[in-house]
Image (cartoon, rainbow, N blue to C red; front, side, top):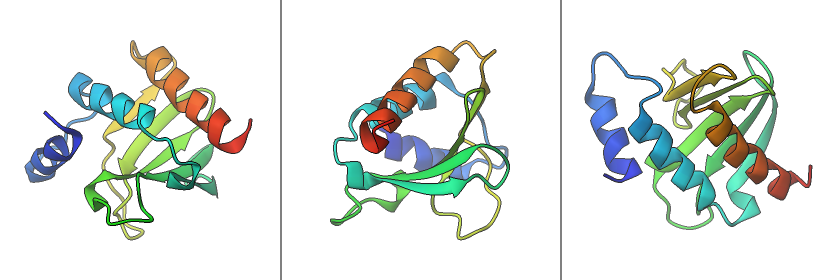
Length: 120
């Protein structure tokens, strides 16, 4: 299954799922595929905690709006939402903290990307 297909199916659900291994796997692959620093935009302080970024691969070209994500993060937690929310609350695809079994895997990929993009 591809990430877009997952999101299309997820959008049809009345009760949205969170932290599914399949989505985490697909999202990690998506993050690893970000090779243009212009696809990652720093949004400043997060609305709820930490910092916030928007990731939209190939957004300078004809790109898929289903593959636009907003992430809130700090050293203890990561949340991933759709980037197509127009300012309204959205359920999370991912909401994990350091106690989650997939924390290390996801946080390593995300923080490596942030170091590469923002020279941290």
